Length: 377
Length: 247
Image (tube, rainbow over all chains, first blue to last red; front, side, top):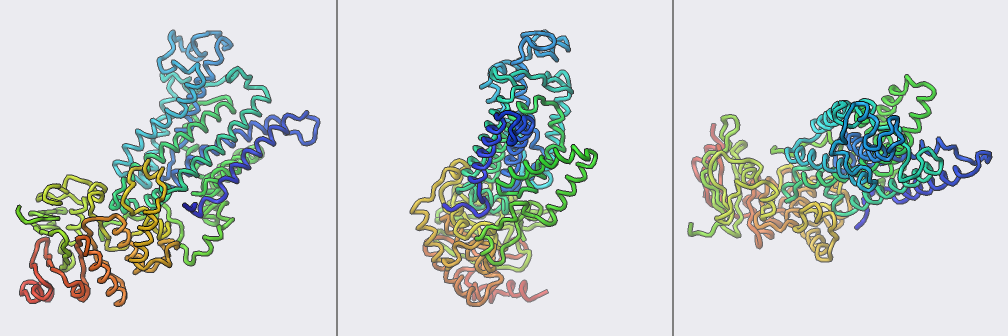
């Protein structure tokens, strides 16, 4: 079956991400006196951008291909981050301030005597990694099953996703939740025995993150390339019509929604390892909206554009906040408006697919706002 | 009931905010039949389609498929899977997909998400699509986006998608609205051809088209059946004349 014209260069993007990360990691291993040496901070920054790229891919998968404008995807990202953060907390062991082998520092500080049951098992890396996928996936499954079956869509769904992430933020701020409250989880020492502050660990983490991005790109491409991708397009543009063909659009949406949450959770887990901290601020509604902007800038519904947008916008954020920190939000807002006005297909729209140009009178891309239900007329 | 029945509506009433869109409507369709439904605007034609396909639940009355299956208890996808296909008044195709992909999605078979995810197109499916492309004369447009088709071609594509579902019963809402005379005549041929193997209910305003179909006619008015018979019979019926010409 042919690939739709709107997935240009996904394999190439995956290859570039891996090759670029490999090159960076190798150049980082050169002695600092060499002119081509890549400094350590650049390695961990790139790895952070790539973990954001996973979040962007997750957003693009549901927004670009299923028409679900999510404004709460950072919730899945942060939950994945917390699961990994819990493992890293347990790894600290007796090296904490209170040198307590059984309890993380913040629990000792709160005068807790027992580890809460939901912390059990997080000493084991495979379990934590599994939870970093399963917890966001389970939340997405429950949330999606309820909302999609009730036929909540469009702007109403977007608002509910904002409420979801906001509610989680408030919950995680509470000390009695047992996730470190306001301060979150931090002061990590090592992962699987490797020192988290060693340059080599960061070089390896960059490679692992790049491979995850490449894997997610190829997986989503495989999901979208076949008949299921066409069904998603059909659901996005004329959901009711698919019902009269015998499909249950809510099931198709649920499948892609859960897959998207898994990718976001993986991104969050990798993110926490790179940045060394996770706190309730990661659930802030603004984070989810930023992820949507990355995708819009890169090019919605292109996969590669999501990766491109996440890396470029965050690179811009790093540079900009270094120079004019108070103006960054204005710059981000302006970027979003300018993209919407002048680059509706994002940066990926600049390279127009030849077959798309050949179709005379090609219709404008249908946005969820434009898609009117085909009710009785 | 002793007569074989494909679709039986019995005393179906639907009210919207006190307005009775269907008022104790009863209708019987036998297997293999093609029936034209006519009536002035607001007679309840589209509401009747909505009730049969599960979009609207009636306040009272039964809708039976094959005498035994109560359609009022099922939702749209279940009814579609039973073998009842519907073409909408306003052509509704998937504009961002090619004509071929529109037909692929319509083909009877995979409907569950995981089934669709792992589905590979079979040679049989390819042949089915080619066959439908020939029947609907869309062969040379197969790889164009459906959104780029003309209005008439979209109507035909939607009929093609109905055929892909392999339904026992086709509900066709105003198939020739906005079509040229030549296209209208071709559509009448197409529907007669389809009717050789399937039952069809056509809602239509165009009397020439209904005449060309040459089938039994049911006249709806204010949510109930006003008259039934051949087009010539119902055209001579004084009550029908009054509804169409009077007031």
